[in-house]
Length: 557
Image (cartoon, rainbow, N blue to C red; front, top):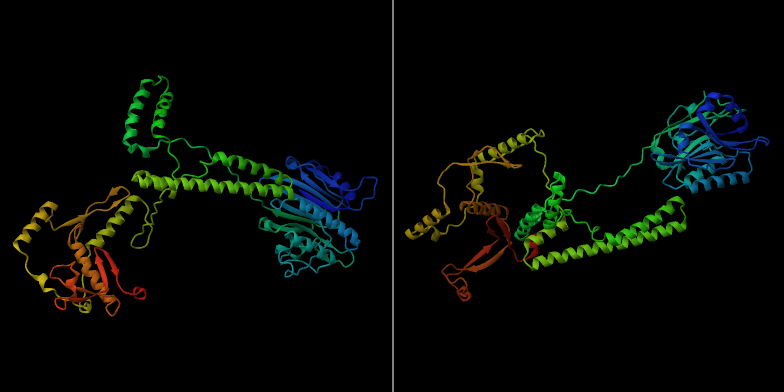
């Protein structure tokens, strides 16, 4: 597509003399009649293949002509411009820029906008005062027309693409002064600042013979197609298998399926399955979404408001104005208000169901309601790497890596250095616990071991379960068996030594009075002056848990 702004009479006469161009182009121009004096005019030359994308009518004046195309990235608006020269009157310049600004205001901000033509303005090379409008590759100095043009571009967030590309100097200029023979940059291609990344290059071609004193300015642009959103198809209904665990529903399903099989049609398999499926759905119901949406329960109330919002949006898109914008904002506000109310009703109802199931001690119903509230649980697995840090792919290789890891972990011999033993503080010995067990105590322990099925085999082996499969058994050479009474005892000893080493010099803790001669809950016996011990307690151990004790909050910190 070509845009020109020049002496339209001579330009149009030369174009019609070339038959090849007239067969491939459609010309749209705005100028004087044939019997009138033609000083200037504007127009477009469009390929015949693009005529179907032009939206009619294309209106304009002698200096500004608009053209609107429908593209894959949205509507594209083109303005062919011919500005007054520097020696024109101020009234002519004011009238031109008022017409141009009125045209720009009519174009929505989300649509593409391109201004093409001879602006008869020099914007200069000073980038600092106009960083959003001029690039670093301007030419010459600014004049009065350039000041007007830059003010317009700054107000509407437009930029002059000729000044943003580091082309050769003679590719940035388009007109040479007839007397001084100096080249100037008067013809610009202007677009929105947000579209500058889509412009590939803008340059002048001096070899193009258009029979005018201005060189041809070409701008290459790549517009990305607009993303298309497709409506999601409604999925097939699925049976609610979570309700199979209900014994009452299972009995009801057994009776319903017998009735369905008795009256089953003898046609195709699809007809027979559809007949049986009705009995299944009537018993167990359809599976709902794992994360219940508040939109579905309130769809009867939300659909009219959404339709009203869409009805208000269409007039604003076609004819933006203050009135249509106010109507659209009112419709949006009403939709948001009703949506918040529907969401609040949904969550309030769900909370009441959870509380009702909890009061009825219905664990299964409460758990299902909680899953609706929190949504499906996500299972996250981290990448598995080898000992050298290489990422392992494949389930069999990952299984071997896990087995090798645990085999090395449980087959490693534990050694304690002499330095660690020397730094370990010995604990006080309780002599009363060192007495040998009696015959009765040994008999009780033996009976308890037989009841628990104690194993005497010294060898232990283990397997790794990963993704539903198990690895080959491997030997375990350290640690104790699962469920062994030594496990919490050994852990308590180790953890006590660890805490003693970490807080051995700390005075934070509590003192308690205790005695071990019976009558534990007789507080009067603790007031005695004999047989009472004062014990300093810093931590309390139970199985694999520990709690620190002190009188002040600062001591805990």
